[in-house]
Image 1 (cartoon, rainbow, N blue to C red):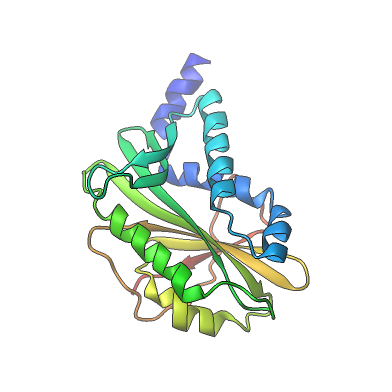
Image 2: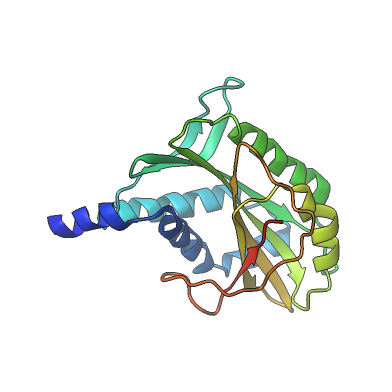
Length: 221
């Protein structure tokens, strides 16, 4: 058992940990029926599911220590990060958001305001500047039409406002020909804004996420 844990310490990569977090969310996509029907945000649910999975990983021998609502090292008093974890020699700061669209004939919240919240998260994360710290935003957006008819407006008007780096998203099915998406991207000190927000639909391998969920990369330009 000890040897297995030592080997885990040597081999665990952050993308494996994020895959485990996303896999936990994707294993419970039926919950999004509740969120979509009632136009509800889901940040606290995401936080609980992710931290619960991290606790399980620690019990399984993964080298991870996690906490919720970690105070930022600088900035306004009381500002806290949704999910913080340490693994290996690095620390990871992750802000969570949900974007409830007004697509598919649904009355949602103003998308612009919700993107503004993500941009505020990015500003806070940019203040974490230690060499051994990495910063991410994970957000879930829903609903979209499964036929892609909302994509041009979503990408051209809203998604392009977010400076994306090392980005990808997972798409999952909802009821009535709707889909939801989980976006994950890394925030860097020098942010790169996409000049062209076309999504590259190249399949990426994952050991923990079921194949029925499509993973797309968002290329940098």
